Image (cartoon, rainbow, N blue to C red; front, side, top):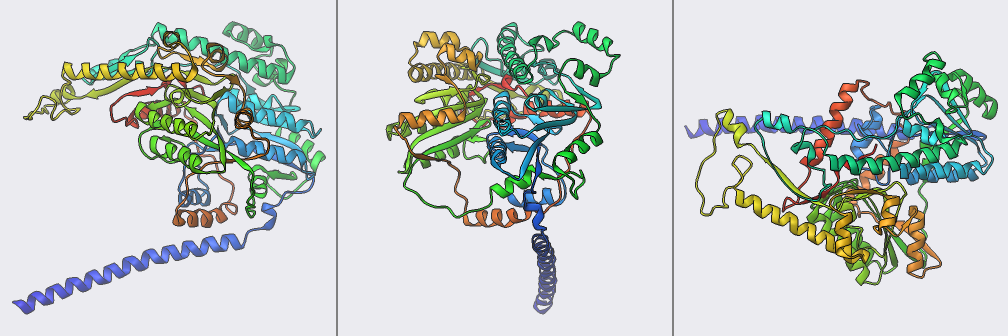
Length: 621
């Protein structure tokens, strides 16, 4: 029997050895083929693809959202996306990359014109659009023409297009500027039908982040607050576009009656309406546009048939790796905080309490850094994580390094919590800030499960033991959470009062969860000045008494393995074909995605005390 057992064991061991060897061989062969493919792709790269064409037009093709920091993507995943011609669901473009390309092209003798291809631009916030528009206006001082071409222009796309010398629209195209609105989805009745018990704890008359689950409509207080800043935002858009186009503010149609009257005059022709309203300069087919550009910069062997240099190619050329030359100049560090604020360590594109604090600490421990600019683009999130970050801001100041905040599209709720203690705060005129309020929320499903015949029961050593989403919430426990929320709100008021040197009663009056736009925030004392990132950097240099200095972005140190793969796959990014923007044209699917994304923001919240300083209604895109 022993011999038989040994024989059986040897058989299965042998089979496993063969299977294991085959498995390793299979995956190693796949990796080898993939590796060889990359090497072949890199070695077969046509040098002209990474060359700026002489006397060419720079084709500024912008896809996705303008951001101050991209969401972290694994280099291997990014390479596969490009190699397979796919696209991230939400592509992103760094604002500073766009500005850098335009600034370089202005001085580049090889570039004769700038062409704005905006049909895949989503937005990103009026402040970011304004930054790019400023670079376009500066480019025009070189007397090189700027063209905007498109089959249609959305409101965000048109903001940039309005700064072009020539705006062309396809005869079957359209331009419709419909203003800004906030229309959310409210699911109180749905939760009731599902027998879900929602527990909400909040402070602030205007703290409306939880309204979607506690109401079937928007409260009057929320309507009042949101209408105020939305109207200010829309006014800034109209003023900027009117000034860029040299047209009257009367050109903007704000009632359906006015729109119908104008459409009747042009027989319902969207394109002709755009011409009559002076949104565009002319209606031109793609071939008309191509011929005009060919006359300006000549032909080339590419799908468009025009001598162009693409945005990606130009960015790769000007970002070509060069040896870093150390210098003795003092440094101003820029730390970016973009996204929702969540506890722990998070990848770029989300603000982690621990990971963002480490970036600030890295600047503090660098002896060459004499000041820090904290660039914030966040609607808030975890109160706990916000406080971890704020404490590190205070440590920077204790170390004698001034901190200047530069607010981007949002710096609301937790985004304002981490900003309030800075030495100086800059906001864009369109920055959405404030929302000084606190809430706690979670759901229990005891009624839902009971309806399905599922019950929870047991014993515990205390009345607090065994609490879960499957059991009812004791009233006393709810009181504890409400006390915690009120305590956090009191701390928030004190943070703002001390940081902004305001009376605490005055802070409470402008707090209550209310959202303010940058221009109003300046009048209320929530920010010090209206300005850009460059203005914030100049202010930091002034406070630190620096005349000659370098500026750099503080980023997480990559491990040797991460650095290798980033550089390895980075060599392949330049050789893959043009991405195809994959999206559904279904309006229903788009709305479903929007709703899911909106309520996903609740799912990622992880404050250990369940207390949040978050402004969900701040989304303006």
